Length: 360
Image (cartoon, rainbow, N blue to C red; front, side, top):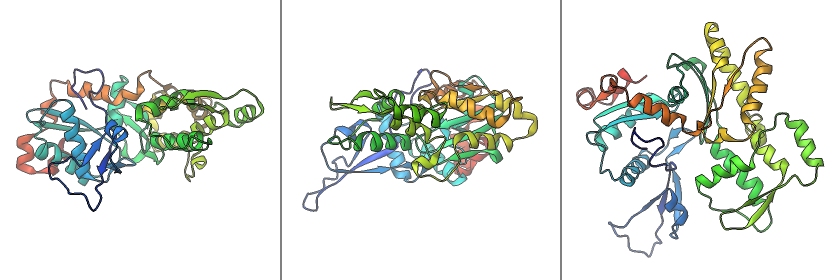
């Protein structure tokens, strides 16, 4: 969350909340804080239950999501969104009731002046300087493959894999950290986890060949410093398996196709006339897409699927973890924003369903 003049979000908070627990003998003070957010969850010494507001791209607890919004505004020194225009991205295949509930919170609870809800992957494409292409967005809980033509998502060709950055992080913690004697689980903030994935995990160009090589080779381990200052050695096989799960989800216990097959399916379901444009404009997004070797491996596998006569271009921009933010800036900065967004008066007259008239 942040202002349109900022190059990066002012506030980045995971969509999970720490619900502070009280023992049966403790007196509950109505004015006492009951929830923790972001880094507070890691630093607090109070017993708490971590409750996700969003899972696999779907809002599971709207009350908690609203609390996250309010906390984020507080971090930005805003009491509400009164008098402010709001541009917000949504995941592909979001339901109409969910979109209406989001509009209700933004208008009724937070006091927004104007609201525009846009497909997050479309914002990614705008952020890359394009209006047509296929976005591979590796989100926290889900990876989306969305073909977009002239700014419009092709719903019939959207594909998803229920495996994302959070799952990669869990594999990293379980396979690399908890398996090491004496280390166990660690509370690691999102920034550190992202750093670990980028420095530790790799995607092999030829997985079978490289996994054999690292198993035979000596000295293939790398050293990494944990948050508590201790050093661990991470072997090459572990590092390759974690990245390979995006292409072979069975490694993570998921029965589904890999991202390369999902992309191919999405292009195949799109109109024949635009397939060439989609193949030439495959855009990677999301923090986990920063893993070493991922763009090259995806390029190789897609080329094999598309055929030697088809031109395939993977666009892996240096700041691809923030492409949706960049695209949101573009849309929110347009002079016509108030015209194509939903105004407070329109919302008051029609209700939450008005959001579908302008946001689609």
